Image 1 (cartoon, rainbow, N blue to C red):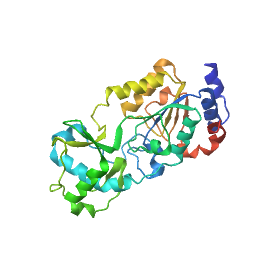
Image 2 (cartoon, rainbow, N blue to C red):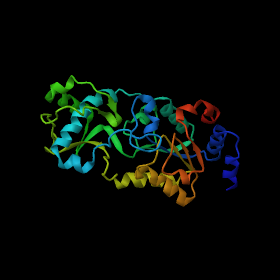
Image 3 (spheres, rainbow, N blue to C red):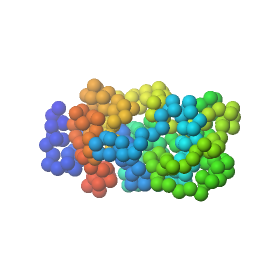
Image 4 (tube, helix red, strand yellow):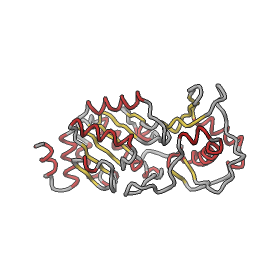
Length: 284
């Protein structure tokens, strides 16, 4: 506790964070949507943790209802064009540098954009999967997204001409379009249902993925949450487990989080706004 007291006595929020990072140099970092907004990918939630937009598709609805799949893939056809062009921003680059400097032992992201890997991070667990890959729900075959995009465009030429406002996770707003004639390709291997290789709401994260992340958490010095409200339990669980093990927790994210009562340190700001002030730590 004396170490934490030393951290908390630091004069300014940046100095408190610098002290935290210096005290616990082997970090388990958990990132959320807020870290990718600088790359043009919108967030689902506001600073109160409430939905900014209609909630995303539910897993059971996607599996059971053709019209839900038609709507999803139509919106995704339009959204994928901009999503695949997103580039890492200063946040992703800083965390890749922290890993190279030995500050980050494991990074777990709730995002599906693979921008951490594009920035150079190696020790990354994509907790909710990756949007650049497709999985068959029947035979479990996996495919790259781009060939499916080409087939979607070929079979639905009218949608290839549409533009729309971007939405989170490669989605696009086509609320007033008629999706009834949208052709959804089947699995080329078995004819089954194709789904992006991401964890939808109402779907279970693979057990092995969670166990790998928990093992990494227990083998680290502290937990740092960046850009997440933690309103989804899949991310909040790491704060709960860290608290049970006495692992210190800090967060850099605007607004409230589900774990506010568990945090030893909280900076209610965006990560990109503190990176420059942490220069001497990140270069250690």
